[in-house]
Image (spheres, one colour):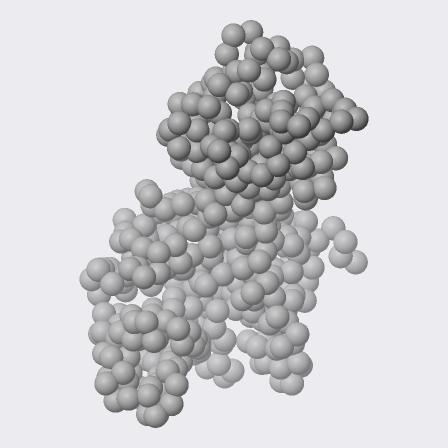
Length: 487
């Protein structure tokens, strides 16, 4: 890794001295640098890296200083003196920002090196800033002498190298965004639902369909799917909640290759006016996709609630658990539209401005392609949905981030964890994907692996952990386990 990507201070705290300098500032605040503070930070870098330490011949400036995305944090005393700073920047100056950032140019003024942990405080602030920015991979290259400090702050070493003839260690700050989302939304399912599987041969969809988006109805060619809408969404936007009640259930049917035949709804609302707004959204969605609302239940004078059940037909349901190690992962997603107002970073609205014909075309893609495995991207996001498909298949997965289709202007972290409107993850034998549409971007962007869990593959070939072996705890849909530890 280049020098420009390192926290390149030989000893953050300076040489140990028995006495504390009287001039050492005892109070400071870490904040994003303004124009004056940025100039002071650059001057401090020059004083330390060029004049004091001789790491650079004339200047320590590089291309990251000219990148408008670069962020500089400084530590300033109450009188406004800059006594330290650190720089955060995307690892790649050119091209799409995938969420891979580095921390570098961490500097502490000589008079502040014994002021009570200023270096560690700047590192903590850099980590907090990276989390706020949605960074998915945050790294630094530090000199060996500073390894223990970074480890005490939670960083993990993952490689060694020499820079300027001096030994350095590559450090990474663990980011658990996707694991936390899975933990909050899906991980408890195994303990909650496992016994239902044993109560009946068709429980939880039966063998081959455990953990699927819908469930084959025994003795028929029907597939049933059911989803409830979060009360907070209903309270904020009742019409959109009704639309989503149709959308998410028809996506579930679509993922199994089923053609929708009708829906039933259960609506709860405090007042008739709120109930009408929910029903209006349901009606708009049903008309757009061309499916009848067959009936349901409506109750007034209660907290807001909405649950929709959808029925579809297929003689050959596509399972989520049909993948095998070595299969290629394909992501097919409609990039049309934009963030839903009020739900930026969480819900991408690609559907409300589509025609009914277009929506029905997208809904038939899996049915036409008949991949080995499919799952629609839901509340768990693209990474979480891939984890569930892999778990149902008894495999793990690697996602090649640079190949994931994404709209312009959507941050990588948000895009990989949001509900995208229409998005499908499919798995099939290499080069056999048939997911194609003029309305959606479709691209092979990974593979299923024998090793469990989901890993993210970056442009430099490095893979980082995203989700551990179990997404839901329900296990493989068929009972098979393809991991190396399987008997």
